[in-house]
Image 1 (cartoon, helix red, strand yellow):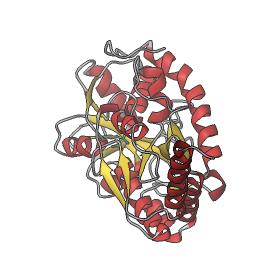
Image 2 (cartoon, rainbow, N blue to C red):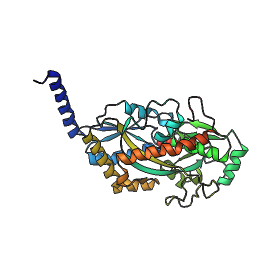
Image 3 (cartoon, rainbow, N blue to C red):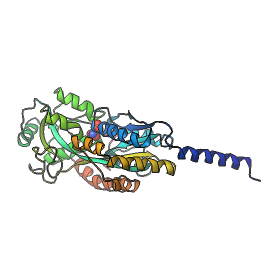
Image 4 (cartoon, protein in one colour):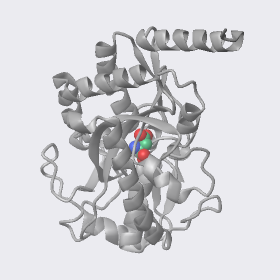
Length: 330
Ligand code: ASP
């Protein structure tokens, strides 16, 4: 005769799989690791709206901003793996392991992968009143004000930090870094003239560039962007090989039931094919990955490849960058 314990366990399993079959039965929370009105927030909100349509439930975006975007992944890692808490994050999932001495999550073991969402290049921009009108003049300005020019970023491990670090190392000139909990608030201070310059995704800078609200010195893709054809690349202006592309992926806590994960993957795949979302992405210079990349295997492989790719480059740039003690270039 089966013991009561086995019967109880069996009952719990049946209840769990019934819940997984009915998923999603309520709204889903998507954590954004940076402040509102920044690029990760913008991409998160667009994809959440699109996924809500195919899931038949609201995907609600919740900002959990922290410098470097390292708190939201920890929170998702510790949440119930039932599919009701998911995470959007960018290349920071691949740069943080090299930069942080103690990271309270492991991007390679603590998550279930849903898939890749989009990528977008970055732009080097400055406060409207900064006198330099092109990259050449800007480099002269930074060198003339060595150690005094301020650079806004979203904290160590953020895309804007990565770009700034590579830029500092490329021009071998110090500047002061000013960390924010996202480049949304950083942009506000840049527009107000409180910080000098920033490197941020086109998803956050396109409108300001097109509106003539900021100075722009180049894009970080190797070739010019169709959406900003008049902006030269940093590569073509003498910073040979300077290339930073930022991608976003979707994650859940490790151990989500298979039907739940399958449902999320299907919804993400529907979103990357969604013409409305593609149009919205194109308006801000981002491109959705093809559906065959919006898969757990593709995100896992890309993340691993990006950790391997950025690790040595960060270590090289670290040799030039002054990082606080909590950080190591391992
Ligand atoms: N894109 C920003 C960064 O990593 C963060 C954000 O989305 O606000 O620099």
